[in-house]
Image (cartoon, rainbow, N blue to C red; front, side, top):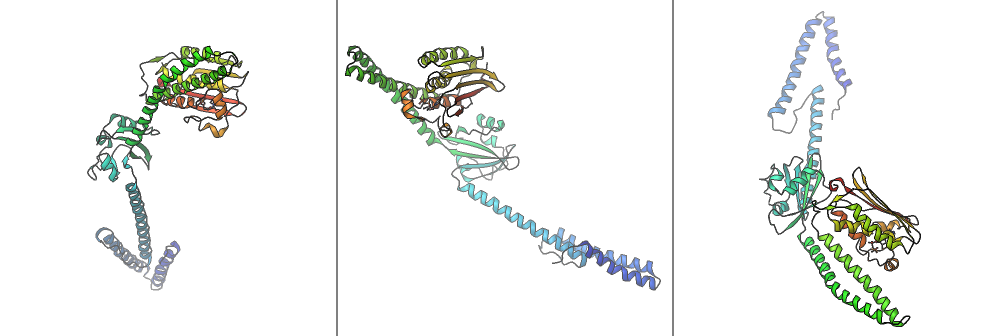
Length: 429
Ligand code: ADP
C-alpha cells in the first residue's frame, strides 16, 4: 500500500521537471518545452480528477478506480477513509442492534425520545402497555400519546429523581410506574413498569395492619380497665401487686405499639398534603415542649426550645406533630440523666429548618442507614425499657415524604445525635 509523503510528491515533481528543464536549456527551447509539459501534466491530472468524480458521483461500485503516482496516494487515502467509516458504521449498527435486543428482552416498556418530545424508538412492550403504534408513531410528540397532565408536568419539570405512578393509558385498572432519565445528547429514555400487583399488595398490607390495630384497641382498653381494678384490690408488697404492675407496663406498651401502627398506616395511606390547612408550628412546639419537660423531669434533662415566632406552615397538623414529637421524645428517651437537648425551629434560605440535638450516647454509623426501617432498634433491651417499638423514625420518614423532604441523621458514639429536616419554601405561609 502506498503511503503518502509530501517528500515523495516533491521528488516526483523534480523527477519530471528537472530533465525537461535540462533538455529545454540544452536545446534552447525551455519555455516551449515547459508549456507543453504543463499542458500534458494538467491533462493527466484532469483525467484522474474525472475518474474520481465519475466514481464519486455516478458509479455504484465500491471499488475505487486505479490511480498512478500522486493520484494513487489520493485514491489509497480515500479507500482507507472509506474502510474506517464502514467499520465505524458497522460497529454503530451492532451497538444499536444490541441495545434494541436488550431493550426488547427487558420486562419493561422502553421509549427513547427527543428532549422536545419526538419519539425516536420504542420497544414492543411500549406498544402493548402504552398503546404506541410502531413505526406509525415515530416522530410524534410523546405528550400527544401520553396525555396525562401529571406526566406532561413531570416531563417539563426536568426533575426526574422520583418515578411517577399513573393509571395505564390503555387499561385504567393498571398502575404504571413512569421513570424518565436523560439519555445521550438532548434525548430522554422512558422506562415504564407495571406495578399494579406491588401497589395492591402494599395497600392490602396497610389495610390489614390498620384493621388489626383498630381491632386490638378495644380489647386492650378493656384489659387496662380490669388491670386497674386488680391493682386497686391488691395488697401493698404482695405478689399480686408485682404481677399487676408488670401487666400494666406490658399493656401500656401494647397500647403504644397499636397507636403507632395506626399512625403509621394513616400517614402512609394519606393523600398528598392539603395546602388549605394552616399549622401553627410555634403553638404545636410549645405543647410538645411541655410534654417533653414533664417526661424529662425524672432524668433532670435540660431541654431548650429555640422557636422562631410566626414561622407557620401549610399542611397536615397530625403528620407534622407525629414527626416533630417522635424526634423530641426519642431525644428525651435516649439521653441519659442530666443530659441536654436543644430543639430548633427557624427559617433558612431553602425553607424552615427543624432540628433536635442531644448529647446522649449517640448511634454507631452502621445503624444510621437502617434507623427509619420499621421495627429497627439499635439496642432492643434499651428500647424495651423506654417503651420503644422501633416505629417512631419510620413514622417520621413517611410524614416528611409528604412534605417533599427527608430526615437527616448525624450522630457520633459517645457525643450525641442530631436529627433534622428542612420543610421547603413552598409549604411556608
Ligand atoms: P423506638 O420506638 O424504639 O424509639 P424509633 O424508630 O423512634 O424507635 O428509633 C429507632 C432506634 O433509633 C431506637 O431504638 C434507638 O436505638 C435509636 N434512636 C432514636 N433516636 C435516638 C437518639 N436521639 N439517640 C440515640 N438513639 C436514638
